[in-house]
Amino acid sequence: MISNRSKSISVASLALAALALTSTSCLHTQRARHQHALAVKAEAETDLAHAQADAVRSQQLSEPEYVEAEEAPAVPAALPEQRPSAPSPGHVWVAGQHTRRGGQWVWVSGHYALPPRSDVVWVPGHWVPHLHGYAWIAGAWR
Image (cartoon, rainbow, N blue to C red):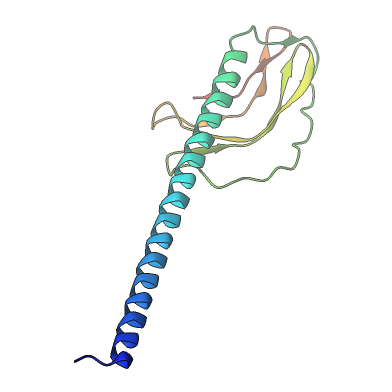
């Protein structure tokens, strides 16, 4: 015959085991949700980097700006910016820079981008001598 004390110890043991199982299950669910949220965030950052790179590429299709002068116009100093962590090991940081649009300097924020091929590097925008002046060459993978 089982005593009342043994029954209460068995019930208490079962309750503790159920509580441990429930808390372990909750922790597992929380970890899974957290990992999923991190994956979604990394994917969103990658999509943003691609969209920014596409925007920069589409702006490069316009005619380069040409200035007749003895010297190339000075490029304004870079603005301070913080570099976030890379979305993946394949992403490369493209530093923010001023570029020319419609005769004005426009700041393009730094961003991560995936190089189109493994044998290219990002070359920032710069002036090159051309005819009797200088032409602005926008930043691009070369």
